[in-house]
Length: 333
Image (cartoon, rainbow, N blue to C red):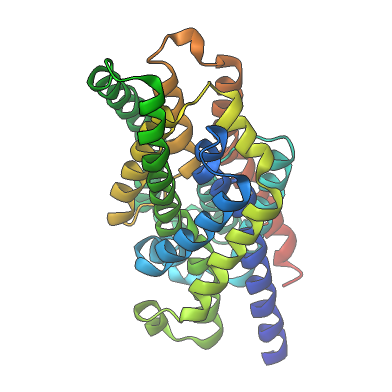
């Protein structure tokens, strides 16, 4: 039994690291999409920036990790089969969508997969619905805030700098956008970047039966999770970067600064409350809001529609996958 438990623990850690890589392919790529799209930073320098600031964000707080690891399901429902089913469901969906350059919420995908797996094995009472309700509410709140704040912020910046020469605006906001991109990547680490942290810590709690680990999460978990996300960004995030940074709307440094500052602020707000939200939704909606200030036709609404459709599909698809995989694992694990 011990050897089996050790094997399952290692499997969960490996899948959590794989999830971190997929997170980097998709979610973390959003953090640097605009700064690459405006050509303020080269892809290589943007990845280096994301690596450092993601690690800093992941090391700053653990509120979201605790919500993910012990807030979605009741303790008795958080087992190896439920965690493995949830991880496989989001890795499969995340890999598929990244292949086609579609930004999704890996946070919501994992949450949906975990809830589906918990329901399959322990019934609907296994889910902590009060926490799930908060997460679902922020599925609506976050993009609305991103669009509205991005729209208003961009209008304010346009009026403030309406008499300033375009060359000077570009020079000023090129520097500011580097800072705002770092802010988004930091906020991503503080929120989405804690997903693997919460998963691996939950696996350690299951394996060691030490609930006190939640009060002092080992540093190796935080570092391994951040490095996995950064590695994924470096090797596979370019299709998502092109979609958000270059295809949704035309971005200049001032637009990138407005979108990034908006998205990071919304993510920080949710992180303070320990609510896992989508970096994808925040930065995408902020980019759309900023782009719409010029004229609504400046946004390629067919691409925006595809992004929103993928967001909506993530919950039922990952929930269904988690449910089916958990039933499959029930007899195996």
